[in-house]
Amino acid sequence: MTGVRFQPASDQSLLVSFGQQITLDAHQRVTQLLRLLASEPIADIRNLHPAYCSLLIKFDPLKIGHKELEAIVQTYLDQLENVTLPEPRQMEIPVCYGGDYGPDLNDVAAMHDMKPEHVIELHVSVNYHVYFLGFVPGFAYLGEMPAALLTPRLPSPRRRVPAGSVGIAGTQTAIYPFATPGGWRLLGRTPVQIFRPERSVMDQDVMNQDAMSLLSIGDRVRFTPISPETFAALEQA
Amino acid sequence: MTQIHVHAPGLLTTVQDLGREGFGPMGVSPSGAADPISLRVGNRLVGNAEVSAALEMTLLGGTFSFPDGAVLAITGSDFAANLDGVPVELWTSLKVTPGQTLRLGHTRSGARCYLCVQGGISVEPFLGSASTHILSGTGGFAGRALRKGDVLAMGPEAGSFRKRKLTAQAWEYLAPRKVLRVTPGPQADWFSESSQQGFYSGCYRVAEESNRMGIRLEGPLVAASFGGKMITEGVSLGAIQVPDGGSPIILFVEQQTTGGYPKLANVISADLPSLGQLRPRDEIRFALTGWEAARRLLSEQEALLASKELIAE
Image (cartoon, rainbow over all chains, first blue to last red; front, side, top):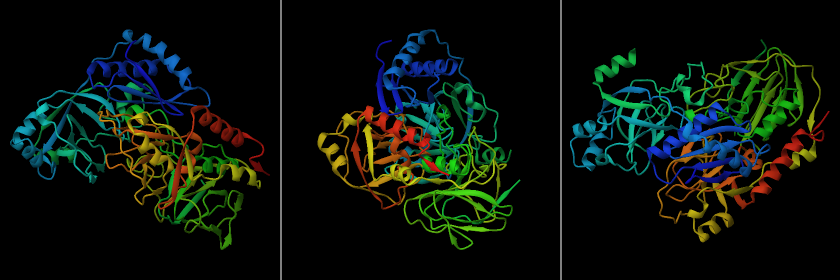
């Protein structure tokens, strides 16, 4: 396979990159490699960190080196074309936009010289693609938003973003599963629990850890606007 | 079930083992002991498997009593531990009789100390590990730091008491380092030569807001001179990432699993445990090391941890 780059990231990790641009094609290869490594595990691999167009492989440095691992991964890449991915799941996430739920909605609207209603309209217009889960448990990177909503991060991150907050940065959007610090601009909040640690039943397949995380790599996601009353009702449920 | 009663929790005391690997695709970082060498040795001293769960204390220790007695060892930094007023020797197994009280105070050396008990601390595992992940409130004891009044369970005692002690030579070899050896990061070539020179010749202070997620540094600013656009990618433990402001951050045990800042360097595996002993205001330096040297240093460290010279009985 051409266009693949191997780089040692640390003395116990190897970064495999499929290009330097976020494309669905590069991302598909990441997902295929992840799936293949899950179905035919390499003994000395300890962890996998997928992203937009790369996969970081963490290994046991006492057992294997970068070059050896690269040679083995190369044989996996040769089989990549044959890896079929499951049909994406379609997920719906209810979001209450604006007000205390989305404290940055009005600012974002002003930045783009549009009405807040139009920002919401654009944000719900896309059937998003889950590129990967990263940052913190269950945090799904969703793309792409319409170019008209391209928005920079906050100049300085908030110390605490409430759990369930729906933020945007660049042309990406995401839901904060926990109250964490965060620099994405907040448009709204969902009452749905995004990470569910009490669901202890684990599927050993790394592609299918959704028992705990509501969203998985490859899922499709639509946002549905809801009222504060519906938010409260769903939160109680 | 034998118990530990928490009379004072200390500043930040959590249950930790060697962490949970394999859940990166879900955004879950391994967590685990900040100084895994101290945890592993402590467990060995009390006759446990190295992976057993123990209490990790940070800067200020707690006060604990043992209604049924216990066999324990305190490892890592010196938190001025005493048992009913009698100073406790670090890195040495100790028998506690029922009703005795163990008190730890402020650190007199590094950031963390470990209280390892025979049988380990018994908690419901989360994704196969007892380690607390503070940010997500998962693992450990109720997913949080200990509080006054908590009652912890110890696992069944594994054997009888034997006095064991870390040897002086081993301690000297394993002592935490202030000069951290690093390999180049995946975006090292984004940084100019002068920027890299500033990084490797400079002295950095550990910032107050450092925690188990990341160690923030104050010192010479480093700027990525390459104008390219960084695409968020997986990040490894000990990665030294440089946000726009130019103050480096070392990603630590409760790290984010992916990140969007360029990485100048990465702390070598053999020196990761030293990160767990860095206190706010400590001063550190970085030394560039080759891939082969990094591997050799880790092999040597593991050989010592596996050797007979580690512990005297």
